[in-house]
Length: 325
Image (cartoon, rainbow, N blue to C red; front, side, top):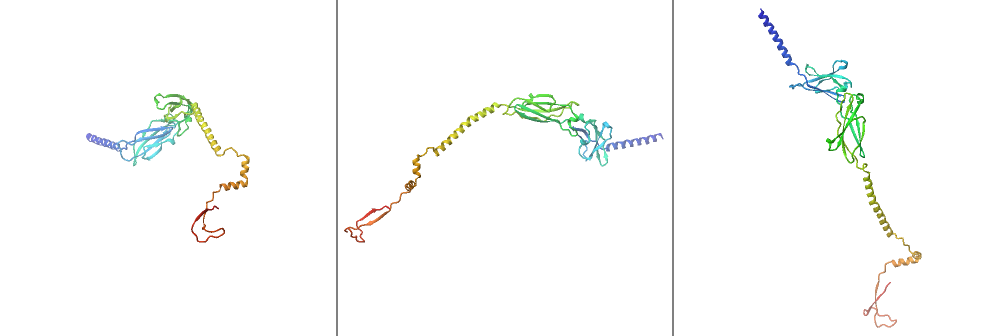
């Protein structure tokens, strides 16, 4: 009898164990490598799909505000994306916890939860914006605070300073560093005719946070204003060359005009004589072309007496006479 009871109990225990193992084996695996990416008060929760799982899954992600002990609220659901953006749901001074799980046709995995995240302390500050303006041998460095996504920078980090590193282009190993700068504009007097590069960081007094470095920005000190004697020398040379050339050009033009229009005047009686009408007609006659000579043939027959008319038709002793009209 006792052996029968033990046999029944053993069979039941074995069935329960096998059922539990089947449930465990059939359970949907959870997402892995869950992580938070937060820059300038933006926050994105990211994760990887379950390991060794190739079937198509959807995901559900939620958050809760720990400081007010609220319950979880979902933001992304039924999505195949491996991230969820929570930025628009968060407060700049909030303390949050996030969780995500995998889902498939009614089956769900276990929740995977993050550690507590404090927005203003744990977020990463992005790089500041830097503008360089050169004037003579001086370079003005203008710095703008990082732009936050859910607040103004000064509302959270009202006490911040800047660290500035600069170097001559190509000599980064010999860079100089300025720390604790409180102004947003700094003017540096540097060497002339030189190209400098700058990089800036923001350091907050609250939580002693250091931002990402700004992009390396370079500018050259100009070549004109920093050496005025060069411009003066150039202007002197230009004037020394151009003035004689201008004078010479005017003199040449004067000589040409004087040659074409002489200043010598004719005597007064010549002018009156030339203006007389008779003189003008004589001058016109003298200047007219010479007439052409015209020749006529005249025949004279011998043997005639004075007053006698020579017989017509004679053809001997012909004489030529020139007659000019």
